[in-house]
Length: 217
Image 1 (cartoon, helix red, strand yellow):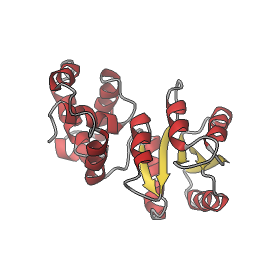
Image 2 (cartoon, one colour):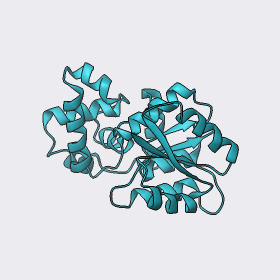
Image 3 (tube, one colour):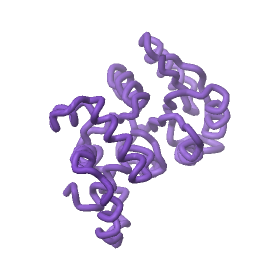
């Protein structure tokens, strides 16, 4: 059973998310919070697998809360929620370690799928969204020497590099498995090694590593 914490300053939004999540037999809502500071306390209390985190909230915003939670040992997966797919705060949250992001008008089936993917260490980011995120995050990073990025990839195996390229293109594990003709379990193993070797906390950061090294145009 995957446990979920809901964080949003609007009670109506939290209630709506709860109704959707409670339709799934494999998901359970363990609590909610109205701002980032309360979210940090609630995570310590409930230890959820996944946090659905609003970006703009009083007292402490979702970006700050995400960075704080992801710096902890054994942090939850965090999906940031927004009303705009080009919100600057969303890109900052992804750079801080959020697993992915969803628009608040995301259809229920896609919301459920995103939570399940996040719990499994995957992310629901389409190739176009991943490219948009990479472009925005690296807009001020053009001076970073490519050789520095390449040096970080030296200890990767050939298969790990192939998986990294597919992550850079925005594909989830299941599609990578099909594209590279390997089992999904093997892909997950390679992704775990990539997180460790590249000191990354989410798939967006892996995609950035591929982009900076020139593995993905």
